[in-house]
Length: 172
Image 1: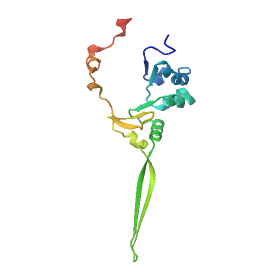
Image 2 (image 1 turned 60 degrees about the vertical axis):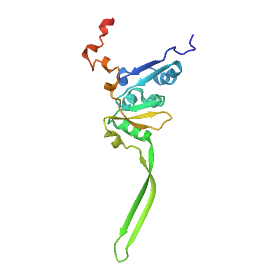
Image 3 (image 1 turned 180 degrees about the horizontal axis):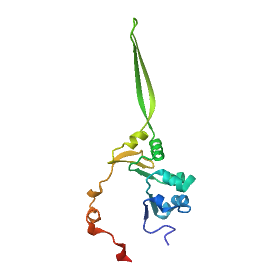
Image 4 (image 1 turned 90 degrees about the vertical axis):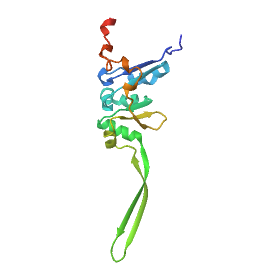
């Protein structure tokens, strides 16, 4: 009836994805569900969690994600891969030297060199109010995290008012 697509887009929020366990053929699912009006948000503490469960297929899964949002962390594999994916910038490096003796001499050396846009250390100590967002086809950027208390619907959350607690028992 809908040509193999869902009539309404479905977004799967897979929080604590590593604790769900192995989803059979997930590397194939993530590559094809988009065409069916389904998207998946994989939420992990560290990329190493994905590798420990999905082994060689972890890179395929990450490769099929159009965006990555890094909120902070210090797991080495994640930091290394993020730093590498951010790329490098070209910097101008000037070195001067001076020799003092009977014959004064002065030297200037100029070179262009590459520097990581953000080193692993810089990512580790990134301000807690910042995040790094990478979207396919767009250069990654450093941004402020969204303050959920400023959202118009924040008043409906349990964090705002304990009376807003979701009681699943009411619906069973």
